[in-house]
Image (cartoon, rainbow, N blue to C red; front, top):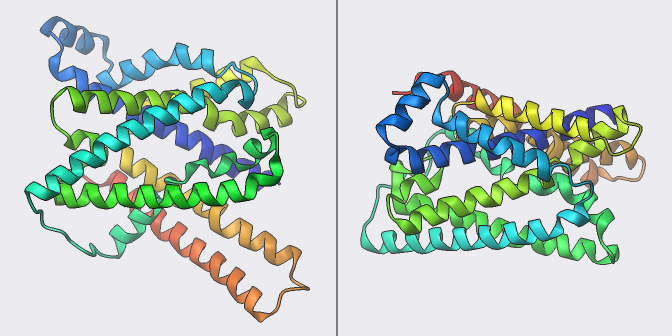
Length: 314
């Protein structure tokens, strides 16, 4: 139980670190090319980068929204965030298709094992909402329908994410950046898409931190709502986001090191331990295969992500 709690805390907090990195980098790229000389000088004198200023700018507002005690009260914000996200992704889809129809780029089908494992870490990270399964089910009015809704949602999300990544690579080829909106260029549509995605992630932050709050409050707050613990966790996440330089490398690291354990290794291992007397050789094979796959992806992806993080970028 302790190991699961630690992994959930690391994964969910890691997702939120990624959100803040995305917001900081995106806003810095979007607005800092247009700041005045005086503003640029003030940034330099303060010793803080533009990304740091935007992350700290989000901090007091995050304290406010993370003070909301339950998921039920966050539902309107979640719906609004989803609408904004779908609109922004739709605009990116349209831009990708239009570029694909105008030009063709060099497409590399397989970039090597290190790239494969690095990409798998990012892909596992993409399903960061999996840690919200049990909290959402517990808040549902008719939880008996949860299984069907979950299966349908995961299927649609898989198709959408797969198409989003494939079209982005087909449109920009080897020039595809870790934050795809950076490829869209200048213009008000591009700016609106980037701001929309930032708004979505800002609102999603307290939703993704909810499992962390439940665990920390259960272990250190007697299971009661504790405001100062929540604010402390928001501060820690913000500080970590300030010192992580690259968005994609961090995604791959969290996806490989933590999410592979939560998504592959532990579920199959627990199933094997609980039902080992009832499983036939096929059940054993499936569970052992999933555990092995999770370990291989986790170790290889973590190594690839660390190599990328500490390599010299030219």
